[in-house]
Length: 400
Image (tube, rainbow, N blue to C red; front, side, top):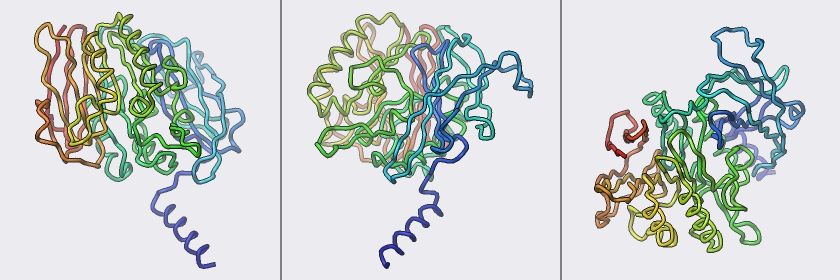
């Protein structure tokens, strides 16, 4: 009885502290993800209780500034539903829809759910097919998401509301397969994840070893995100690429690169093919582990040894990385030099110290939460790093 009482107390305390996030009758964890055709499609995911699983849909209309949403442009998309049991043994229903046949450069409204249990109406804009793109890049969020990361994520959108999407460079949470932490991550993105498409790669904290010691991606990942599946077989939605305007975004799964030699080789072959056939003006790699580390004893030679030559051979422009919980930027390439700008950043509160012996860093910071904005306009790329209070800490410009 004593242990039961302790369990009940801890469970009740967790609820009181907002540490558990059970599914409800109305949709939650609503999120947009970029697809491989951002001009004409948009992926949407959300969650409900199992009791509400049947008949989930998305309604979509072109924004016309009228409060009457039942107009002639209204379209209905039936959701694909799967059931999921989280680490707390709670079952919920996850729903996925791909909104298709969209018009380029158009503002849309959508809501998800079913009669009697709808989400609010959200708004997003499709890519317009021009040579312009703007987005936000965030390093590791990972810890204290609700209490100490939320302000950084929200400040990033206050600073850069014109962003087309948001990129997360891994370690979105701290303890893999922990539903409460995913609840905090979605809480921090309230009103953002459902209006700005999200692009993410997993970090080491999204992985664990199963009972057979197999390296396993957090099962929440593919339940709650809807990312491209055009990467290496077996790494769907964690290794992929997409084009947006003049930009090619390539997502690498560096956790399996570091720990699995077969996937390391397979991603290297895949990457070279993607770079070799690349007709986009700008190329950005998003990955968790950095080529150049900022900390002692953290050089990721399994990754850098095989992949860095490809980055430089094919003229990748930027590497957006995390993992080291500091900020660092390499020097800008010299004229006619194909070397990328290597960036490491952190948006969450977990911090490491910088090793002063690392001489690759032209600009660096420690014990500082940051966010980044990137704007591409045809032949020019502008990059800015901001501290949590919205002050510009670092910036540079690249020109083609």
